[in-house]
Each structure stands twice: as C-alpha cells, then as structure tokens.
Length: 103
Image (cartoon, rainbow, N blue to C red):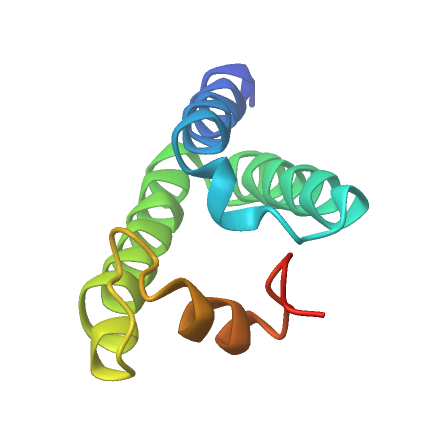
C-alpha cells in the first residue's frame, strides 16, 4: 500500500507544530526532537502499510486526544497553563529544566 499521503500529513502536522509551538521545547536536545519526528513518521508508515489508511487516522486522532488531555486537563490541574506554559518557572521545573537566568 502506498502511504505517502499519510506520512506527508503527519510530517506537515509536525512542521506546523514546531513552527508554532517550538518555543515550548527550548531546552529539549535537538537530537531528541529529531528522533521523535522520525519515530512518529516510521510508526505512521508502519500502521499505513500493515493496517491500512483508516488506522493511521485513528492513530492521528489518538495523538490529538492525548495532546488535548495533557494541555487542557493535566497541565492546568498541576498549576500550569496548557496553552501558554505559564508560570514559566513551574513549567521549567515540570520539564526538569533550569530557567536560563537562575544561576
């Protein structure tokens, strides 16, 4: 089965997501960000070729649901705005990062 459309769709979602939300990954090592893209694209291709196109859309839907649960429920429950990442100190602590000017 040809899966170029599904892989291109997920790659486009990643591209837009990195442009719009990349600042929330400021302290994440670049290799981890790149690895995440390749892993998700590989999983997308595997699902498309082994299970079919409709399962890729189920996979994308599950990723969207996970995103919404984390950003609209779990983060606010833990005192972090899921849309802005504020307060920044709490968000950085949650991610295990140090604030840039907190020496």
